[in-house]
Image (tube, rainbow, N blue to C red):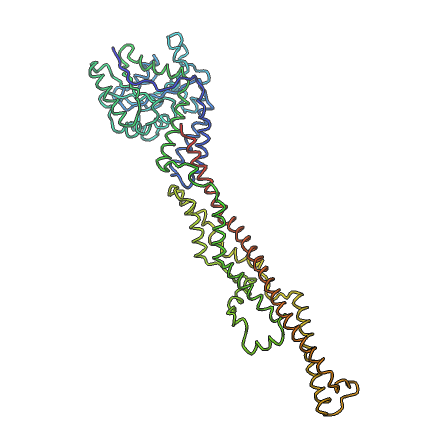
Amino acid sequence: MSTVTTGTPSIPAGGGRARPGLGSRLAALSRLVELGAGTVDPGLLEDATQVLLRAGDRLKLSSEHTVVALAGGTGSGKSSLFNSVSGLELSPIGVRRPTTARTHACVWGLEGAGPLLDWLQIEWRHRFARASALDKGDGHLHGLILLDLPDHDSIRALTDHEADRLIGVADLVVWVLDPQKYADASTHLRYIAELSGHDAVTVYALNHADRLTPEELAECVADLTRLLEKEGVNNPRVVATSAVVPRGSEDLKAVLADTVSRRRAAIQRLEADVERVTRAVNELLPGSDPAASPATVDAARRVGLTDALCDAIGVPAIGEAMENVYAARSATWVGWPYARWAARLQGDPLKNLRLGELRAEIGGVPGGEVSAQPAEVDNAVQALADGLSAGMHESWRSRVRQAARSHVRDIPRAMADELSLIAPRLDRVPGSWRLLQLWQWLLVVIFVVGVAWCGATLAYGVLGAGAPPSALGALSDASALPWVGLIMASALGLGVLSAVAARNFVVLAAGKEREHVEREMRRRVAALSESLVIAPLEHELGRHHDFYEALRSLAP
């Protein structure tokens, strides 16, 4: 009889070696599974993991054998076609209930096939070898392992899933279809649509061709081809077969011989599986240019985060308050005592400066009482995460936000603890203050002595109130009054000048102290933001970048 073949084999020439890139694509898929945890659908990750496991197992087994699975529904004539191709009555053909219960395997060239058959879990009693293949003219099939699968729509197949398992691992799948049932929805929805993209390793055998006229056969082949193309199969290979007429399976055997001779089906099947997973990931997480989103936090954003956190804990206000309180406190040590006593009549200078609350706040820093505003901290971290994740897929944006906020509750307490280590003690008195105070009191004593001297001279030397003690006879000498007055004026002048000079020096020292404290505070806040925000954020940004790099590496 005449048979019809449509479509051209899409298997590229090139011998039995894997095309360059399969190993790197499998490595990229492994990386994708690792990086996709928590982002990619778990079912899809499990599917990708199974592809990796199958690839690892299959590549370790015989590369000289090609596993071809005959799959089909009940009554498709699959077992008859299996026997026709093998030339032996190996697979039982039912009469009342034509169903295949267990997978049968026929091997052309048994050497080295044992471990592969074990991996396929083919029972020993269902393994057959064509030891005399060369004698029967089937040498071109040497290396073929032909499987007759259980009927995928049988009751047994619904319980043990053996057909599904072997369809998933076979190097080449031949779908045996009946002319009257080739459009069966269960086959198309459950298998053919799922295997779209596996065109190079899928063949469709339109069986029972002997029941059709040449015109009907051509019409069925054309209709099946259109149906397959509608299902997403590109350039489908449709072979018309018959198991009951001489040479009715020759076209199928020719396809099998070509596949076996190329030793490429196993590699192509793995490539198709990888591409199927890649398409699924791309549909779930649309492709993104890894360079479009940053993999690290740039310097400007780091500085911006540090500024925001410093504002949240009030570093500028603390520095300013410390400077003002430091300067105000110095007045009690280096200020001119007479001026201080006069100021007491006007009230507390800190109240006049309105620094009382700030001083209390600064005084509380060493005890850890200063704390950041949680809302401001949260806003600063959120703004950073949103800026860095702009343009990402929403699932990755969510992961970036979570990473940035993973320690956000710890930041206020951590910053307060850090500031407590560096905040200056406001009760600290520098040695220079004590020397200046001693100098001021010396001038006070000189002035007081001068006042006493002038009073005694006026009493004894001018008003003649009496005679001073013999040891203090100089007190009655009125001519000394100008000199005493000069000394008193000098003491007052020196006191005022030293107070002003000391005040200026204290203000300068307070400004430097403020700069030092603020600089140290910023350094510590930056270090905290690095460990609590930037590090986990960059880890997630790196995962996002590596994920899409791996996804791009999966492209064929």
